[in-house]
Image 1 (spheres, helix red, strand yellow):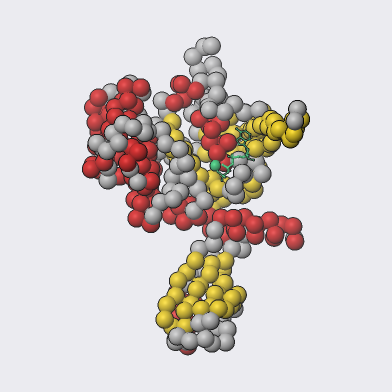
Image 2 (cartoon, rainbow, N blue to C red):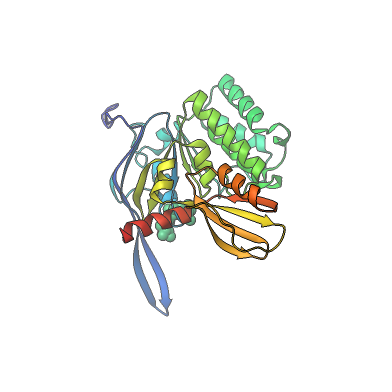
Length: 330
Ligand SMILES: Nc1ncnc2c1ncn2[C@@H]1O[C@H](COP(=O)(O)OP(=O)(O)OP(=O)(O)O)[C@@H](O)[C@H]1O
Ligand SMILES: [Mg+2]
């Protein structure tokens, strides 16, 4: 193959054009009986991500997100369509691509379980043939920004989930990848760890221009990090646009949970906010996610004896479910 002959000239850094992935699943249904089933995990997916973009990639369970990420790394070969990352066909040139991408699967570590954290980094140093000075610099930077200093000599299996995740993110970045795929990097993390990871990703994208594709079930990850979000459902792209637009498309609502001093009739809230549930002195009010909570809180605080209140964000599943309701009822 001639150098560069396979390369396509394209604006996109990540380009998918009608990509499909079909799994043949065989299932035992009885003695000598097997059922064959085809699962269309990704079904004609097309999108483009430009260099330096940080894009959210969300959707319900089984939507095809991880399958997409696996195809983008070359772990899985598409059943159809065309896919390029940095001009490279991932499944055909997986090793060459590996030097240019980083990947973090939140559900599975790439670190060596029984070895101290630093050993996994030393292995990456050799495996990717990272120049010594570069390795040092990147390691120092990750250690400082991700707070790994005290953890380097700890065996990975002794790390907490949040510590391990930060360790995994560092491992994915030691070789200066141009693109980072993150598949649920904040799953199971507490608020402090989530904030640390988000801050780190924001800086990475802003300062290094690293292209980031972020898969998550936490809508706040997306809201705090991405200006663009893609929603996938049943292997198809159902939304691609700004995060705010997602809320509009799904007409999503947040919930204000109010604890009153005593049981009272439903709060008389200014429309479109309304009480959706009452349980003793606690009441739940739904209001549009696009509207700030402050005004509503002030109105209620002025008129009712409050003990406590909190705002609940809509989850991704609810937002997407509402997108569908709207579409089918339109
Ligand atoms: N190796 C496989 N063999 C057979 N079916 C698979 C395989 N991997 C994924 N699937 C199926 O493909 C579909 C998409 O799975 P995928 O893991 O991509 O979803 P996801 O969007 O990442 O979901 P989650 O939010 O639960 O992580 C599912 O129906 C899943 O069961
Ligand atoms: Mg997944």
